[in-house]
Length: 482
Image 1 (cartoon, one colour):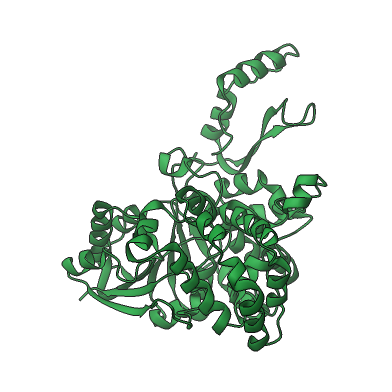
Image 2 (spheres, one colour; image 1 turned 90 degrees about the vertical axis):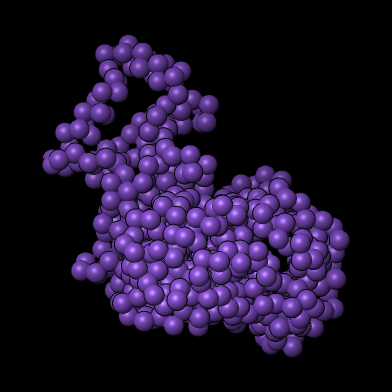
């Protein structure tokens, strides 16, 4: 668990410091607790009360029950979901200190249209922020959904949403995930949510209480740059992108115009503002140059170098950005039906423009699923896709949604994943993915493995019609196992 170990200096210093008062802090005490009792909840923290962030006294809160000992990361079965065990010390997990995506950036409407969901389907999806998995569950009863992410923090976020669905009322849930703020989050976490969270998820959120509380900093830099964290959606890598976007739009002089677009009463009014006051400024060479930097586009948008290369192989960054944004603002009404781009502008949702899981009727349905003690709808895997697939029985999986993940892979990684998908999928099962390329190089790999591949939609240069409400990707594909 994060915070479980102290460095050598800290461990020795506080051990001998407390010995002066005849308090002995040998690590064997914690080890014995975890040997003799099964952990129910634990938190590892630092006390900053002496000199904040300079003197940090380590402490832990530990609750256990008398039965056979289990490791901290053992499987955590809650009401309608299970968090599968994982080793948080593995390098693929320790590289992440926060989530990359605080909100999901793929349109579930397009997914659901292509998935043809049926009761009894066994689906694998990449967790991301969990929004699309919730959308699938709300759309069709009787699904088993495997949510997979090797970033533990993405799964912590999904767990938090499921715990909130299980325990909170709609107004509290809306405050947390619609507005992204909950002033009494610490109290709610400890008294209501903690019982529903796995040990690693509770540790993470207990260490990040400021995620849902306002930042009251009055510093000149925060005021001028609007970079101060103030809600859920301005945290994580995606939150950094939102805050940087606020700075860039201010510098380009289009911030107020975008706010007008987010509240435009009609598509006609929106198009007028976009064409006359925003497009030529926002799509300037300066902003394109920023996005074309491999480090910037990874940190701000989660686009790896492999995917950036695929984009460049078929055109330029300038063309790609224009083909992404123009169709969205010319064909989708932001204020009423495009919560993705309204989020980018306003950094929160509105009750008339938000993901389905945040609407009151869908909240009620998902609450029943989250509270269901008989059936497990969500299985949360903190692992790679290949590791998860290899633990499934051959033919167990009906469908898989892997977003743009294959764009990240090397040829060897892609082949290993395609082989694992082929084994896990039943006959007639299929995989959906999106890509930054119109014709991804790994289409040939799927075909070579025996899959029947079809393009659901492909974005053409200079088009003015969006593929979906996000329109970030150049193509949407389906590969079926014969």
